Length: 463
Image 1 (cartoon, helix red, strand yellow):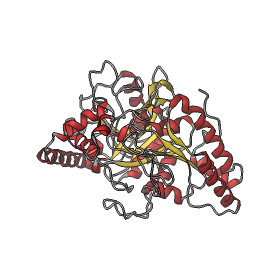
Image 2 (cartoon, helix red, strand yellow):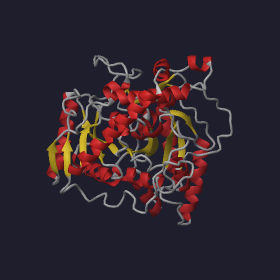
Image 3 (cartoon, helix red, strand yellow):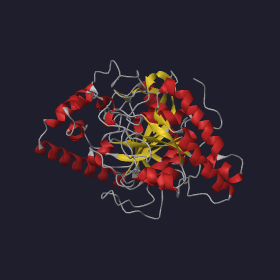
Image 4 (cartoon, one colour):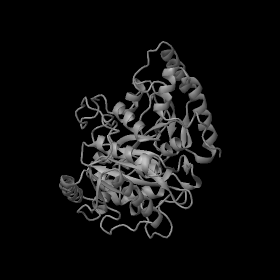
C-alpha cells in the first residue's frame, strides 16, 4: 500500500488556507481523497460505502463558493468521513449489522453530521464499526475486518476503527467517531492520530445510544488544532433532539489552544496505581512525553487517581445496553449477530434493575473521586492503552489472559463513566513501527484544557 500524497495528507487548516489563497480547489482535493479511499479499501477495509458522486457534487458547490469568496461556515470544502453508527442523509446507516435493512428514506442527519454539513464539509463516505459499536476492535459479520494502516496484519482498534484508519491513511483529515468506552481513543492510539471524547453533552447525540450516557460523539483528526476546530463546529448549535445536551456557550475550545502548559499541575499515572501491566515500550514513550511537558514548564507529579478498576460497574451498564440493542430482534436476526455480541447480550439480559442501579451508584462515586482529584491537578496523563496494535480480527491480544476488550482498555472506560473530556495524542512508535498514544484527561467541561495540552504534546512528544 502506498503512502498518502501531499494532497491527501493535508490537515483541515492547511486545506482551508490553500482554498482561501486559491492554491487548491475543493474538487481536486475531493478527487484525490476519493481516489485514496478507493485505493486503500481492498487492504484496510475502512469503509462501508464511498460516495464519489455525492462528494464531488458537494466539492463543486464548495469550489463555487470559494470562487465568490463566500465560504459556507468553518469547514467549506474539507473532506470528512462518518462512522456508520451516525445517521447521514442520503446514505444507509447499517451499524455493522445484518439486522438493519438498507431500505428506507435515510433523510436525516445526526446532530454532529448536520453541523458539519452546515459548515460546508464534503462527505466522502461511511466508515466501518463493529456491530452496534460493541467492542474495542473493528470487525463485523456484515463488513469484515478493518486493518491498521501502519501494518495491515494488525487491528485498527475500535469501535471507531474505520474512522481512525481512514484519517491515518489519507482519506480525509476529519472523521466523526463515537466513544462509549474508549471507541475514539483506542483506534486513535493504534493508528497514530488525535481522537477526543468531549465532555458528555457538549456534542448532541441522536438517535440516543443504547449504551446511554456512556456514549459521546467526538472528532478524529491528524492534529489538535483540527480537533478543536471540528469540535467547535459539532458543538456549536443546540439540537432539540438531544434533551441531555449541555447549553451551547460562545466560548469554543480553540481559544487559548497555543497557550502552552507552563504552570499547569499535571498528574502522571503510569499504571493507575499498579493496576495495569503496561508494555515497556509503551511506558517509555509515555514517560518521555510527560518529561517533555515538564520541560515546557508544567508541574508534573507522579500521582494516581483514587479508584479501583470500575470494570464490573462498566460491564453492567455496557452489557445491559447490548441487551437493549437486541431486545427487538427476531430469532434469526439474533443468530446472525457477532458471536461475542450474542454472549454479552445474554449476560446483560440476566442483569436486574438493582444491579444496574448499583452500577450507577459506583459511577457516581467514581465521578466524585475524580472531581476531588481535579481540585489538586489540572490534568491527568496516562497511556491511552497498555499495548500497541495486535492481530487483526481478535477481540484481545494473545497471551494477555483476557477475553473481552475491556481487559486491555483499563485507561479508557473509567472516563466514560465519569463523562470527563479525554483525548489520545500520538507520542511515537514502538520498535515495530506501531503508534503509541498518550491520554490527556481533565475535569468535566474543561475540554479546551485537554486540547491545549494535546497541542503542546504534538510539538515535543515524537508524535
